[in-house]
Amino acid sequence: MKKIINQPENVVEETIEGFLAAFGHSYEKLQNENGIIRRDRKDKVAVVTGGGSGHEPLFLGLIGEGLADGVTLGNVFAAPPPNNVMEVAKAVDSGKGVLFIYGNYSGDVLNFGMAAELLEMEGIETKTVLVTDDVASAPVERKEDRRGIAGDVFVVKIAGAAAEKGLSLEEVTKVTQKANDHTFSIGVALAPGTIPGATEPPYTLADDEIEVGMGIHGEPGMERTKMMPADELTDRLMEKVLEESGLQAGEEVAVLVNGLGSTTLMELFIINRRVAKVLAEKGIEAYDMDVNSYCTTQEMAGFSITLLKLDDELKDLYNAPADSPYYKKARTGGNVYAK
Amino acid sequence: MPNSLQEVRLTAAQVKEMFLYVGKQVRESKPLLTKIDSAIGDGDHGIGMSVGFTKAEENLTQKEFDTINDVFKTIGMSMISSMGGASGIIFGTLFVGGVKGLDPQEELNLPLLTKILEGSVTSIKERGKAKLGDKTMIDALEPAVLGLKQCVEDNKSLLEGLKSAEEKAEQGVERTKEFVAKFGRAKSMGERAIGYQDAGATTVYIIFKSMREWVEKAFVQE
Image (cartoon, rainbow over the protein chains, first blue to last red):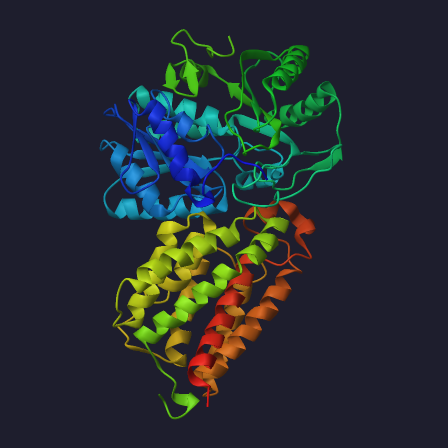
């Protein structure tokens, strides 16, 4: 597999070095850990996100005003170790506690969980919201087993805005949990992404094959089928995600059409056009549409659609300003890329 | 050198040598573990274990050890702090879980190894919430430790104990093929995970196999 890297074991460190070469004016790395924090930290609840590397711009692209205060980065597709999580939490805690937000994967739960226990012993209060937006990853009866994918972006956005408003850790956690409960995603894979240094892709999809609902690490999805036109594929995903969300005519949503790595912006716009049409037909208001590749898996091809069901509280937080190198929200509301 | 295998006791320095050998064997199994994990997981298990044992080797070779406790703790903490992923915590707990609260020990014999690993099984189950049949490393570890326990009761030697553990772990790995996964990324495969062995269980088998090989090489050479 061709990849522009040096030594596979150095990819995470070198990614961080490159990120800081560009944005070091606003961010700094912790000395002995792969953690990055904001330089201008405030006296407020701290929001920490993170997970395995390899999904850039997630997670390091989400640190900034109105977003996360720190990120903890593991090796490629592997949760960060507890000491890494702990150091980031300690560095950003202002005494008002730390909210951890991460995708619901076994490794992340174990490592963040151990870190949270150890932090508690050191007198640092933490809360956790697991992101579980992927509706294809488990049936609705086992909703708590669902994984987190691109919905991370919306959940961190809401948490960051709530923390910036000066809410307490309890309050920030509550509204962040609500944001997760209102976030529904579904993806489709066209081709795999490979771990840097791996000689073979982790799975294969034939040229004319796609897998609906496949996870971002290649976790098996709902159905493997033949490639189809964009509209047909979008309709299929929208049907499932709308059913799961229980959205009714007259309600409002923020939409994220997220590319998985090598899918082009042209394709994403074609998909988004159809998403807008489907929502309009259902009488659901697309309050905001974001078309971007935030949550990727290397050169994986495919996309996901995420719907955030808005109410007044979430809309207010959604509209709050946010500013990181890869996610910006203008002070007037509405994504600066989408609008 | 002990007179009979029955009395084999390892000093802390020997335990360190044994696990350096074990680490080397696990690292050399990286392609195999990657292949196994790619079938139903995301393929990073071999890489993770390799990172963990490399860190353990670095920390083990840096110093002399007086106690068994310290050797186990050094290996476990190396894994927890370097690997990340579920494996980092679980395999780290395999080494630290059993020496937690254990009085300092200068020699390792079969009863002590058994006691340590029984503690590990309890700690891992507590942390990871997995039980037998969930298609995890527990499916190899728990039967292996039961094998050790049986050998203690039967007054067997360390080598015989390790042979039994290796055999039980291997059978455990085979049995994981029959299970659907309750944890990790294979969980979402449901029935489709049947037929594939668990990568973590495979690593447990490699660990016991390598321990047996080392003890055999060190003490059976007349």
